[in-house]
Image (cartoon, rainbow, N blue to C red):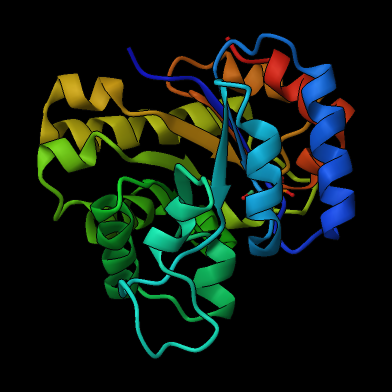
Length: 251
Ligand code: 13P
C-alpha cells in the first residue's frame, strides 16, 4: 500500500525563531495524521526543527536540496550525509525553482537522486510542466521525460524509496491550482508510465503528491482523487491552521 503524505516546503521563509514557533503550533494542532507529515524548513533550521519533530514518529524532516557530491571543495553546498546527520530522512530534489533559478538540469538531478539514496535519504522528486506545454497539450510527454531522465536509471529497490511530486509550474504560488481532474489525469499517466518501466506493483506503491496552490479549501477534493497520494505544500504550509487542515484532508 502506498503512503499518503503531506509535505510542507517552506522555501526561503522564516527565521529560526519563527520556524520553531510554526513547528510547535503545527504539532499542537495535528494529533494523529492519517499519513506521513514531512516538514522541509530552510537548511539553517533543520537541526533545531528536527529535534522538535523527533518525538513524533509520523513527522519527518526534509531538506529542500542537497549537493550531488559526498564531500569536498564545494563552497556553500551541503551533502546528503550532512543532512542525515541532522535528522533529515527526505530531501526535495528537482523543484522547479531549483531547475529554473539554479540551472539544475536532468544530469545533475539524477546525480542528486543517487547521492540522496546512497545515504538512505528518500528523494521527493519534483516534476511539472510550464504553462506553454499545458497549452500545447503535451504536458504528459514533458513530465514523463523529466521522470525518465531523473529516475529511470534506478534499479527497482532504489526506485521504491522515491516519492514523486507533480507540481505544474503555472500553479506554483499563483493561486491557480490544477483542477482535481487535471491532477488525477497526470498522476494516472505517471503511474502508467512507471508501471511500464518497473511493473504494476511498484507503480501502485509509488506515492505521487500534488503541489501548486494547494490549500485548506481545495486539498480534500484533490486528495480524494484515486492517484493523488497527498500534497507538497508551499505557501499554505507556513500557516499552522492551514497546514493542519490540509493534513486532515488526507484520505
Ligand atoms: P505553493 O503551494 O505556494 O503554490 O507552492 C507549491 C510548491 O512549490 C511546493 O513545493
